[in-house]
Each structure stands twice: as structure tokens, then as C-alpha cells.
Image (tube, rainbow, N blue to C red; front, side):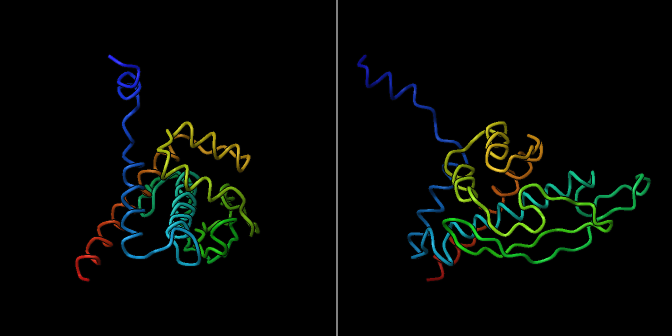
Amino acid sequence: MTTLDVVKRNKPEPSAEELAAKELVRMAAEQGLSLTGPDGLLKQFTKTVLETALNEEMTEHLGHAKNQAERDRGSSNVRNGSRSKTVLTEATGHVGIEVPRDRDGTFEPVIVKKHQRRLTGVDEMVLSLYAHGLTTGEISSHFAQIYGAQVSKETISRITDKVSEEMATWANGSAARIGDI
């Protein structure tokens, strides 16, 4: 057995996220969709990740998922729509997002803080989530390092699950559009 054979065997299999990201990049290239730029794939993913993260933060804040509040809960605080906000990222430029609100006005987002307009490191975070298939612990550390805020592994898990679902939906829709051409 040669050293090359040992290296090939020890190389980990690509994660589901990495495979999905490669497939989405391939499909985007087939459609002529740029990875960066005003309507690029990275901008779409940045929007999806930020909105998903904000919604999961709200779920953690309220203690229940959307439309899942217990009748006998101790608080009357529930989701109360959202507000539009535009943030500026390094590689994707301006990204329009919807920030959830709560009835009591006590929600303090961590990922995109109130009054924050400029995000640094978001593009790297998006690429890390999609291309590297990081574990929830690694992503949690990544958020802490970039934003200086703690996001629980459970929240990260819910975010990555929802983003993966949205990636699959996007991929299926793209495949359908390619079939129509």
C-alpha cells in the first residue's frame, strides 16, 4: 500500500452541506447566475442565513416556535410581524432582510443588532456554513468570534436545518426551471 492510498482512505467524505453547496454552485453556473454581485448566489444565501438566524433567535427569545405558543405559558409576548432592514456586507453589498419583532419589544437580536447597518464577516460565515460543513459547535464558535455573541448549539442546529431545507427547495426549483428551458 502506498502513502497515496493511505491519504485517500483517511480523507473524510464530504458533508451533506458541502455536497449541496457544490451542486448549487454548479446549477448557478449552468443558469449563468453569478456567485457574487447584486443578484448573485452568495447574496441570496446571505439573506437566507441572516433571516433564518434572526427567526431562530426570536424562537429562543420567546421559548416557542412560530404559531406554537402554549395557551398556559407565563408570558403574552408573541411574534409581531417583521420590519425591513438593509445591511451592507463586504462581498455582497446591500442585502435586504426582514427582522422579526415581538409584541413586547424586548427582542434584542445578536446576529444583526438593532440599528446595525454594516456587517463584517457575514460572507465568510455564509461560506463556512455552506462550503465547509462545520459542526454546530464550530459554527457557534464562529459566531462568537465574528459577532462577539453566544448562539447556542441548538439554535445553530435549527438554523442549519432550515437553511439546508431552503437550499434543497432552491435547488429543486432551479432544476425545474432548467428543465423548462
